[in-house]
Image (tube, rainbow, N blue to C red):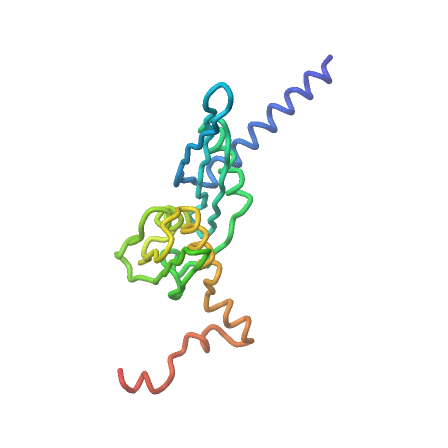
Length: 191
């Protein structure tokens, strides 16, 4: 009897620990909900599709989509999928991008540029959600092509995957970070 009681107590404790670990680490943002209907013999059956972006606001971001008969269940499924698909993006001074880049997915195309402190997030709709969950504070972005939120988010994350820090570039080339960041002598004379 006591053993069964201990097992129950242990399971409760595990659930509490899981909830504690999950909650503070990630923030999530609902980007889009789509209601779809299926016409059947007795009338219409409604379903919902949710698109969610999740991030730790310190350089990790992911997105997920979920479908269910109820909105909260669709959001829950999308959030779980987003947590499984996180990507790490190196940030410059924990506030902006290291360099300008372009991302593509299908007909969606986005252009992202690093910005000076105080610029803020200049981006529309789904891209803004990705940048906020990533932890970017200064970025200028433009969506060209598809306005579909799914394609815009995929294109944004495709572009962010191309981001590389000076440390990564130096390591790839077998040089020191100072050599990578050093400006050519011709530019120094003009300045």
